[in-house]
Amino acid sequence: MRYDLVSAFVTLFVVVDPVGVAVATGGLTHGLSAELRHSIAWRGVAIAAAILIVFAFGGEWLLRALGITLPALRVAGGVLLFLLSIDMAFARPSGIRNPTGPEQAEANQRNDIAVFPLAFPLLAGPGALTTVVLLMARANDAVGNAIVIAALVAVLALAMLTLYFTNRVTGVLGVTGANVVGRVSGVILAALAAQFVLDGLHQGLPRLP
Image (cartoon, rainbow, N blue to C red; front, side, top):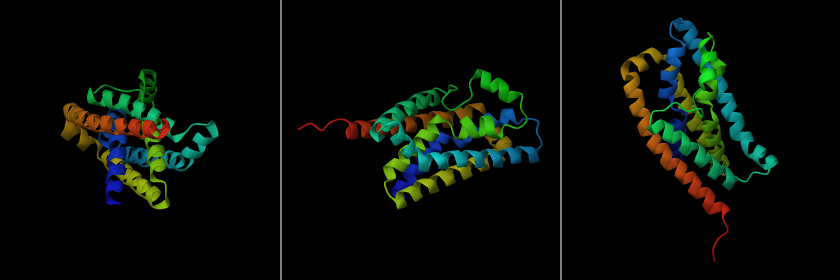
């Protein structure tokens, strides 16, 4: 049980990347009052939590309704996360997790970024949504589901802390430090993505005699 909790926490931590989110949000909230920044952080994390929990409990049902099998999701999710890990390892902005150019321009014009781009796609992007569905599918029972949700809550709590102290995080790490953290996380995520693909292929391909 302890191993499952650590595994789920590490996976979600790497995908959500609270440190990277804090650095990305720092530029968008520069010049805002501390009260407004804290309000944005609270609402952004709350909205992201709601989105992720809905996908955690309803994602498998949605897949069945669309005729998508779990092995197929594991392979597709592994490929998606592998693409994200490449961008993280090379410190490149990714449309999988970060806003695109036009989206970034729109975000720069807003004072309230709690929903976009903080909640989505920075916190609850396609990678995080796919990961939480895969982890819940792997759990298979109530205890396992509770472990995944606990890991998710812990990661979002860390995201809240980093967003609350965005100025300190960006001041201590700087761009180089944030890129180093992202590169290390990218390597870990690549291995996790490969494991998802291997699990999907093992379950989806016919067994050889």
